[in-house]
Image (cartoon, rainbow over all chains, first blue to last red; front, side, top):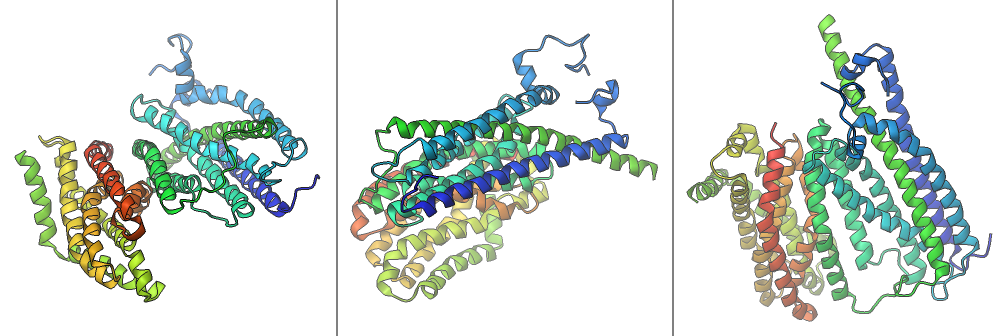
Length: 60
Length: 259
Length: 221
């Protein structure tokens, strides 16, 4: 790593913070997506059908 | 009711239909996600390389200019995302676009996160540059107010049980907020020059050498692509969430009927 | 026109019938003046410098407190539904509500301002500036407040979230209002601030009925 000058701590803190928050929103987004798709699969496996899905049995 | 998926009776679909119908959106959005994600990752790698290994320290600011490479993209995105929400709000209220409110709802937490990161990086940039973590200067203060507006919108979404009813009301607030943003900016700048007549050093002055511009643009693009991915994923998730809700409701009704 | 005035009169009468709410409002406003010296110390010079700003913050917070009674009673007893389908336009209803709200919040607060000024050791020459700034700026605050109340009228606990929604929007009025009320070194800027405040307050008050009416319409179930 190249020398970051006298204020290296601030630079590192900034990049670290942004990395953590960005990783956080990515994980949250993916977790939420996973939760909804798995719950949806659960419900459809149970036999609960949406109006339009029931007509042609097509799943998105 | 004829569905756009019915090949016999469907009218020819325009590009508008392809983004308007939730089912259609789900179909094509899946294929866009991977390219966007890969693009974003590559841009981040490239941007970080530029930021740390291929750009010199600024002659005025020293190495802290490297913080600008993550501050400016987040600051720009915080405003771009609100603009996107405002357009979505118009789509909800005026054009009655079925996906508009989904877009608006999905974007809000992302915009708030980018705004928070802009404030965070701005404070860390300010400390070595001006001596304090928070300076109450025009731009940072306006960004703080923008964060409060994002959080207010998110709180309003959550206050409603019926998200479809919430959509139009949140849209009105989003638009009123959008109209107020220039007023807020102007008043905050006015207030700032009133109380701090001494000019504070501004890093992004009129001239920006290309060595600084390149990593800036690459990182901005990287974050924007990332927003694109997350926005689409959140929109898909919102559609699924609404389907889950209606199925749960149906299940509860059927359960009540049979018991 | 008569329906418009009748609506204002109705709201005034309803509020005055239960004057406890207005008194609580004034009490809250004055209490802020009482608690500030406890928090920052009795240094008279400091208090005097802060006085115009504190008056404005107290006015803003007190006005936010009273938001819930704008539409909630009407929502609960069905009057709102009747008003939505009345002969008078919903925008006119919104403006009437706004005016009644201003009369029952800003006017009492302006009357209580001298009390606050005394407690904060405000230079009495500046009291006039404070009152003028409040007179000019509070209509704009009332407009934002009414808008926030309209947005949240269909929520059971909308009264809790409305202040949070309005606060960012009210900041420009707060900035210009407090600057217009200030004296001393900032007095010259105060006149410019007063003009900006007047323009902003007028614009907001004139345009808000459309946004308020839209919010009310969308809240119909």
